[in-house]
Amino acid sequence: MRCVLGLLLIILCVLPSRAQDDNITFDLSEIRKRPTTIGGYLEARPGIFATDRNAPFYMIRHFGHDPKNPMAQVGSVLQLDLKHQVGGTTLFARTNSNLNHTYTGWATDTRLYETYASLRPTQKLTLDIGKKSLRWGKGYAWNPAAFLDRPKDPEDPELALEGVTFLGGEYTAASGGTLKALTVTPLILPVFSGLNDRLGAAGRPVYALKVYGLVADTDVDLITVAGGGRGARYGADFSRNINPSFEVHGEWGRDTRAARRIVDASGNVRTIESSADSYLLGVRFITPQEITVIAEYYRNGTGYSPEQMRDFYAYTAASYADYISSGKASTMDRVTALAEGGYGRPNAGRSYLYVRASRPDAFGVMQLTPAVMLTMNLDDGSFALTQEVTYKPEGRVELRGQLSFISGARTSDFGAKANDLRADVRVRWYL
Image 1: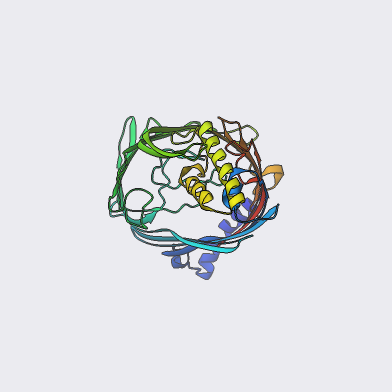
Image 2 (image 1 turned 60 degrees about the vertical axis):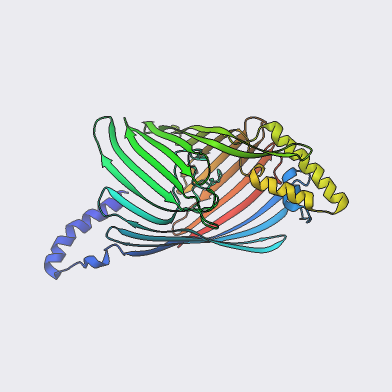
């Protein structure tokens, strides 16, 4: 560090005299910000899975097949970002392409994650139109108030998500006293077949409003979503830094007409609608040893109780036995539809704990970050434990290795998963 400072001092002393002697000039166009930028990454992710043939979700995912155990998989991702910015106008597009190979063969999937135009006529007003990821909410692993966003992956919550299509804007007003800032974000989201159709009924637009305020050094959001042929939804979140090393955040969301399909052990299905409250409370702090810890409690008001989950698993086992004896897939197709409709979504239970601890620049190695993550269903005690090491050497390459273990009875949330163990390596090259 001293050598660098000394070199900078020498350069500063020499530059003026050389400028006078040699008439050195600088072309500001060489350092001017380019209006168009291209970014993204190319990723390879080989992995291996230890499967549990008697687990309910193994039966759902692999009936009709007999994959080897352990099961290998190779995945690759190409994500491209294109941004053009001139003055107060920004055009942005993001694509995400996946190429995966499993025991069933090759599969590809390409999606347009974002494509929008943003216009900023004044410093206080921004207008947006197109498809964009909102990232509402303050939670790290979950966001019960982010009614429009797609759910995060708790093991990799920073991953880009596919956005929603809307017409909206953002107006920011400076203030004083207790309310130091105020931002209002209204949105209109059209709903058609293939466009925002997961948000409501076709032909019935969705309306959303978020109001942000900096109140007494606390970030606060108030959120409301209506329309789409669904019940109104309300949410709120907050985040506050108690000190530079300790932050607390929370989030709450209410769905006034949440619909759930519930199946009993005999296969009888009923749909219920009721008001449901979900909330989250979390902290983020840094220990004297520079370990960053994130801990969150999540209450999923639209989730299933342990008894309801066990009924679904019992019906799955009975349907699988019928499939093995008869060879007819109709009952398993029905189970698969139920899984896709709710039982198979990530963290489909009611009460969860998430803890992540990471240590940057560990063991004196720059850009080496080991981490450990625990996600636990507090109702049945099952959990997933993931150990991770990330290394970013100089340049554009990032390396990450993960090893995940699952613990719990086969009739529990995590114990019902298709895999008991997963190991994978991610090699990412940034463009």
